[in-house]
Length: 184
Image 1 (cartoon, rainbow, N blue to C red):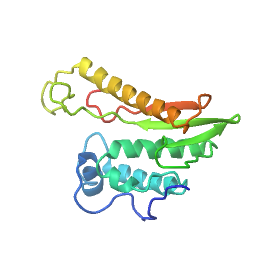
Image 2: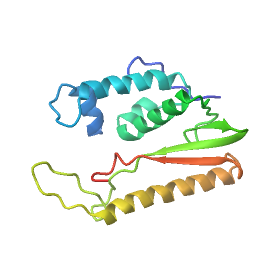
Image 3: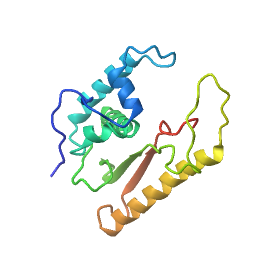
Image 4: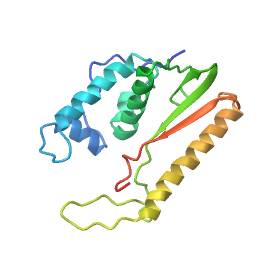
């Protein structure tokens, strides 16, 4: 049984959402950003979504989760579409497994896409950069965010091994995107 996302025409859903990046791309594509052309970004995201949903590997709540975790869901889409366009046939057989897998020389390779965030607790959180100010960057906090993600994914991997979801001889690709950590 493959989990299916409703066949929405658009990646971006109307309504409130918690993720600033999602809001900026969805609602302010004409905003004058010196670093990004948000009209092009929005078009690219929609293009990825069109290709990604055809792969049938998205979780049922993928679009709703994107409203909370835009960078994470974008990374998952980007990774899946890129692998697919390089002739890897992606599969997903149940929701509690990593994002998807593909076969390579007869071996299952599980893919886990992760985009660590800035952190929850103030003492560990990587602060946002402020424009027009000198910002101090704390490499220890950045390293902590990556380390925390690695530990979390290792624990999920071990649980999947214990449940026989992932076999000991399966490959496991952990693809990390730093977009969610300021200054990284």
